[in-house]
Length: 192
Ligand code: AMP
Image 1 (cartoon, rainbow, N blue to C red):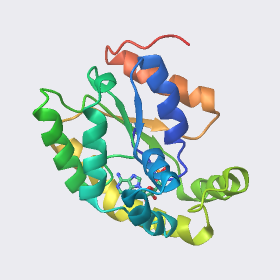
Image 2 (cartoon, rainbow, N blue to C red; image 1 turned 180 degrees about the vertical axis):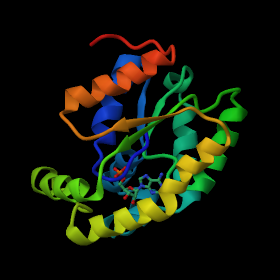
Image 3 (tube, rainbow, N blue to C red; image 1 turned 90 degrees about the horizontal axis):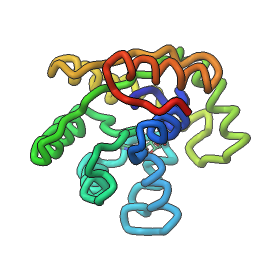
Image 4 (cartoon, rainbow, N blue to C red; image 1 turned 45 degrees about the horizontal axis):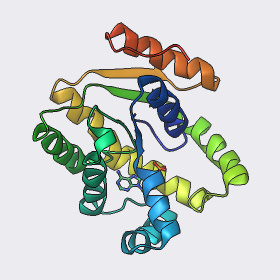
């Protein structure tokens, strides 16, 4: 699940993963969990996350690799917020290849920047995420356009299917857009 900060990718990924009956692997949630537990990784990641930057590739890759080694990931996972840089994507492709696996599909949620800003500032009031500040958000958008957007180009160049989904609308409508696209590609998705 690919998309800018505030595009609803976390919400959509968790709903779609349920209906695909595979784990939802969210890099941001895993990092926040490390921060909450006060692990070495969490201590390193926190200031970077609060400033809206990216945690170093090797740390994130190690964390995701460990997650993919868990038994429930054997039949595939829905990745959310990873890969976020081209080097992460290249490493992921390699990590999957040794497992005789690959990225089957990229779901790209598209939401205009103006709408993202409104949504994130609203989320700041509701969830109190420490990176949902005007400054953190501005940085995350710059990082997204600079470092993360090229990941789509990477997957386009290796011939991975990319499904572009209009991410503006109500939550159920967007989930159905994604489900319909997956079904078109012969992926089986349960109806609720
Ligand atoms: P998210 O919950 O996906 O918005 O992620 C929150 C923050 O966690 C990001 O702004 C980054 O600081 C960090 N983060 C999440 N995923 C990654 C990743 N794949 N690579 C580097 N940093 C990440």
